[in-house]
Image 1: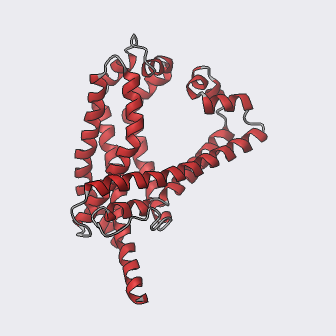
Image 2 (image 1 turned 90 degrees about the horizontal axis):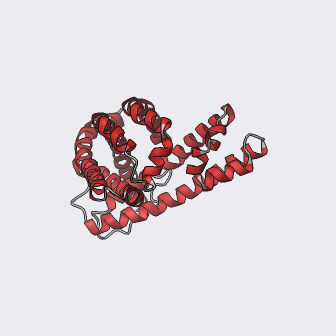
Image 3 (image 1 turned 45 degrees about the horizontal axis):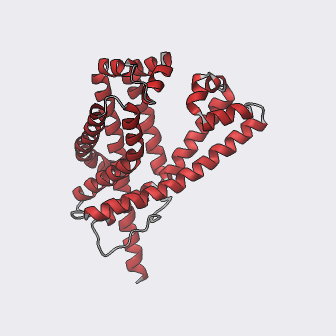
Length: 288
């Protein structure tokens, strides 16, 4: 009950902070496409490259907002904040390696079970756009592959939840110049709690985002080749620009819903971290 109360108290200020921070990032992304109107593929590549670091940095920033409200940290050292973002990303990289291995294991089981063909699987892994354009990816969809994919996503989410406490530690330690950040501190702690809340947040938020973005999703399904071609540098195609322009309000609302989902999760992580840090501190004092 205390965790829920603290989460509700933290969620609104974290959300307001997230609106500003994510809003600035969104403006930078939009500006990037306007600056390079003839080279959308370059803008798209830059966004893909920078976004993982930006996401880690903003996640740390949002948890720090919660810690500041709880008076559990002080003004950050920006240099340490950037460094901790990279360190946390390296931790996420190891997690992605585990998830990739899990994907290969599931794919191997489907292959030996006769649900996938080797040529199709190779095309999907190494040339996903080609697989989608030729219909190979669509032909691989079956009840078995769908169930396997859902199981893969659930396990992947659970594995990612193991990184939530280290994320909070990264946020707390950027204000302590005496501490040496341990990127595995608290790894796996409260993972079941984070997993349950993450499932609830995704189950409520994703359908809303889907409804808001349905026109864009439908446009992609109907003319995915044109959109892919545009992102790869075909300057003659304007389908994505027309589709996005017609749904700017929905895109903005979807962004707000996503930001709210992210903020609630950050509030939960902050609340759990505060409790766990106090517990660890009590143990340390007892041992001493």
